Image 1: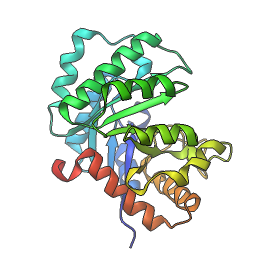
Image 2: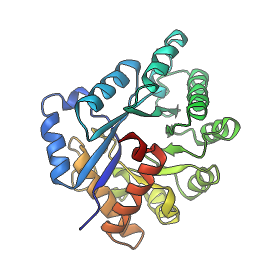
Image 3: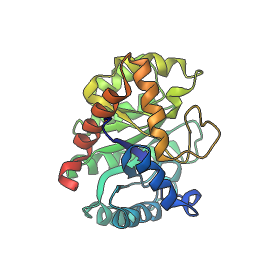
Image 4: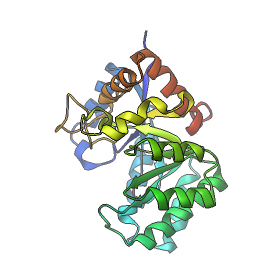
Amino acid sequence: MITPLIDSHAHLDFDRFDADRDDVLKRAKDGGVDTVITIGTTIESSRRALSLAEQYSMIHATAGIHPHQADDFKDDDWSKLESLWANDRVIGVGETGLDYFYDYSDRIRQQEVFARHLEAGRLLNYPVIIHIRDAFDDAFGLVESIGANNRGIVHCFTGGVAECERALSLGMYISLSGIVTFKSAKALREAVAMIPEDRLLVETDSPFLAPVPHRGKRNEPTFVVDVAREVARLRNTDLAHIARISRANTETVFGLAQAQ
């Protein structure tokens, strides 16, 4: 029997799930996924994530400000994040990080907000969920200077061997999404086998980035099985093994045993 999977990163608070959220969670359970971590991206998103965690036992929440929203985040609202992190159903800091691909927010402001999240994660001893796009050098530089208690998670990892080596040297976890099933993601797929067993997570990033064979559809937590299956193939092992180690790693980094 395969160990139930954990979807370590989803956005079930988004309105694309409003019409059928109960069905989405039922499909996840029926498909072998018993836990979903719903990731906050703004104050309001983080509040919705917490509300879902309080409503559904299989959901846990995080709270943070996505780099796309860094310009809109007011420093006076920091206390609102602190209040969310104080709730037992909130188990992580983020989503935070740097995104220089879209540049929806000023890069200096992104760095300021990211740095404060790293400092909060260190102070609270919480994992920090990190988004990096076209910004590996600056993101890793901030992690190196501030630290993340060896509990930083590079979510939806898109780098290659060099980026993976740097992340691991900083004590970070690597979370793999549906992108790992895309044949075009050659550098990422080459790096999958080098991730140590105790540093590997799997995720969907729902509702985005549905894996093959669901590409083009709305992503949802049950599809994390397809991610894990491809990770297993690239690492020359089986789905049961990836389910077991990714679950253990997710429970460790998020402190899920204590959060139950």
